[in-house]
Length: 425
Image (cartoon, rainbow, N blue to C red; front, top):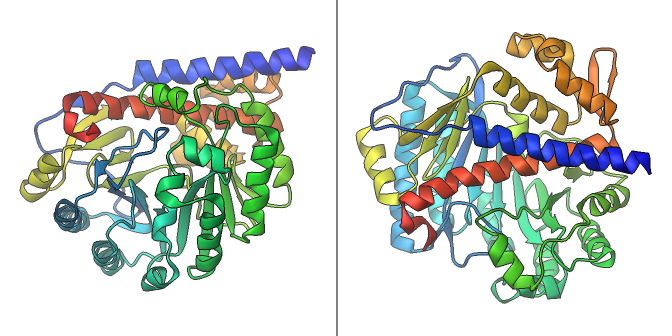
């Protein structure tokens, strides 16, 4: 009983800490001038490309997106390639590329041109790309052989009732249809990942376990299990879709997931693979610094967050006239940066204290003395031989913290939606 009370208190505490941190420290400064980004020109970073187009919108999704129009999308990809060349001129090197959206494969011809340019400019080998079930037709995917190394299919659930409630059954087909599509495309590209969402309102143990069994039976390389992220932007739509408020079984469901996928390797707290790999959905956890290009893309370098223009017309204009499309920044103090990096390392399953200290030129034990004490008392971490490991409960805590982090970033998107109604049409 005492253990449950301590765990519940710890969960509530980290939620509050993350919410306060995002509210108090994420101070967005709008700018109207060119920005010079200071970075290590000897280092290779991750390049993120945002494709903000969808044919239809899902009620739980808060990502930056527009209704697809072929002419608009074609012009957008041209702007993307202009920005990519300017990033090259800026002096950046990249060893990995992640394409997110939106629906990234919504215009295959333009995407292929863009990926080919990325490989030409930066000699990138590791390219990950998201997709929905409508864009994984086997013959089409063959066009991406040699370009995309890892494809992540947003299935979300194999339960027909849930698919209907979140408006995916009509768009992408029934559970049976989606499974047939995945079986037909699996293996065409080196790594296939399935995204699942858990903790939908009205979801049961049986539904979740069936989702996991379906995913395993499809033989994909990776399975990523996201908790439902209900934010200020999506909570009303989710409640309306299910005629019910959010489920309260998140921790219980997480334990079911870990048990069901116990024979898989933990890439991080919510991603599992048959074999150990550095290619997974959470590019920010594998790369503590990255450059984002495209409308509404984020970049994080040194102590600063950079935000690209959201409005498509403004984005295209800035890319034509300036070295980049940045319209806002936010700078973080040292402790805030260390807290953020510590979360990312712990989310990945290990904090090597000596390596961490060398990487960020700090003493982790000193700067996060209070946080480490609290995590140990909550039995969330174990410290051994200068290594910090999350316990099983600690893995769930990092999942909670990452969920709150992404919810905080949604507030940034909301800020720019208020300034630009076009982004939510």
